[in-house]
Image 1: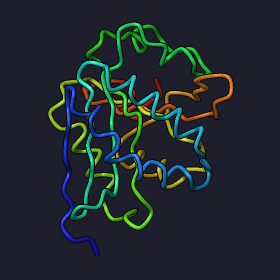
Image 2: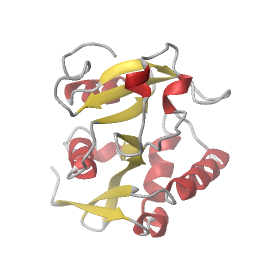
Image 3: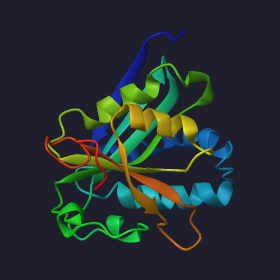
Length: 194
């Protein structure tokens, strides 16, 4: 049973200063299967995170039980000239892939340490991350089944639908690219694939 969990949101320059706060949770979560990340993967994550933290309007949310960090999530607006949609296994319509820097929020990480999973922490992190955002949709990637079946089930329960299979770089694993439409009348909002 969880005692009181708090959710701290950081924006602007603050996310850069919080890396050391949640990095031990990142290391713990991503050392587990199917990820099996080691020191070089962690260094790569740090490098990517520090680049991401330079983006305008980045947002980071850290979950704590007491003083202990139990999970985190972060993301930002997809920039107008993003390659996000270009690495999918299928072409998508231009009106779907068009970005203007404010249309789509991308969640890059959402992680909860094992002892606190299946207790609503991930859903609360997701809600806190998106709270007050003025965007049409949210996107993220997740490992395919059976590797990340629990995460996929959660995203689908929250309303995400698959847009395609993403292969973001040559040595990367394959991911399901998922989209949560927030604007009514969109293809995914109506239960259709884009």
